[in-house]
Length: 141
Image 1 (cartoon, rainbow, N blue to C red):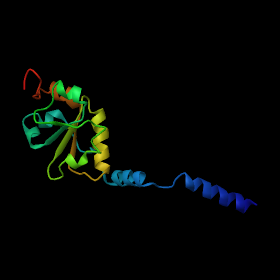
Image 2: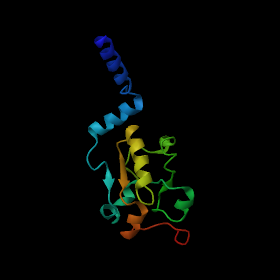
Image 3: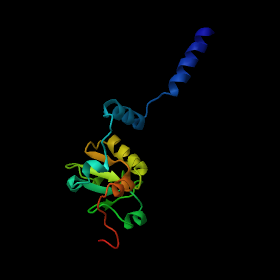
């Protein structure tokens, strides 16, 4: 009887740890991710280096219309994975939002999907503007 209970326990406990493809992909990412995770601060790129990135504003179209980094394309963070075919693989891509929180989720999803050419703008537009980064606004096209 003890043996039967032990086998039942082992079987049931292993069911909770069954790996699915999503979990396996995330585990694989964490096994090899660097500590910084591809984070870039506004101070590192505000001097003009930002022009070498393919820029993706992950905010809503309404928020992006209020001002974005010049040259940025707008793909809302929830749509970025579904629209990943629009994300180039042959150059560095910088994703940002207002604060960096939502773009971090988009960044992570694309990294798990196999994109290794991504960078995340720490502090988002708030940090960018605080460092004096240029913006396209309706009054400053």
